[in-house]
Amino acid sequence: MARIPISIKKIKVEAPQYRLDNTPLNDKSEIVEYLFKIEEKGQNWEKTFICDRKTLIDFRNLLTERLESTTTSEVLSISKEDAIIIDEHYNSDDLCKSCNYKLTDYCKTCLLTLQSPLERKLFLELNKAYVKFETQYPINWKGERISIEGKSYNNPLNNFKDVLTVSDFYIQRKNVKLCIYTDGHSYHERTEEQAQHDRNIDRKLQELGFKVLRYTGKDVLTKMEDIISEIKNWIN
Image (cartoon, rainbow, N blue to C red):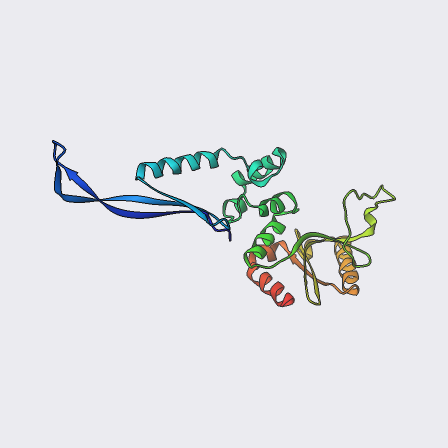
């Protein structure tokens, strides 16, 4: 975690009291002031000064003004179009409203890369559990990572048929290569064609040395703790 190079400490100082004619009294009053320190990491210099409460409030208001005027596009270094998408999620998406990663790079993956709310929910929980993973991981028929940039079924030189699968989440630890999928339908809701397609992919991945975990929407919504435990057991 980065260390903030600004610190503020409350201090109490004695201040003399005066009569109406400006002659000093023997009594002194105690007032609160603030020791404000700025230091440069690695440069061995610091600047300190003492300010009153009003000055500190003015500084806070200035910070608030600057932060509120910074757009999502500027904070995340993304296009204005992508920022509009993210801002719309911030305003209406329940996952965003309760998220601790708002306005971080996680948002770009969660809201611009992942394909479904189920993936996003598992993405957030895996991060909370400090599990390292990759998202949308493409694998070819030899079990190698493959780029899907520019691929289409109509391009004979860069054909999507070269891709065996794109795993929603991929984790590699020591001898374990784990592909994780979140399905928007339960097992009994899938057509036979969909089920056979998934079985063929799973079988081929297992032949290539991968482990496969598939979770239904109901699993993700109601058994998240069990899912995280199972994933950790596989990689540990």
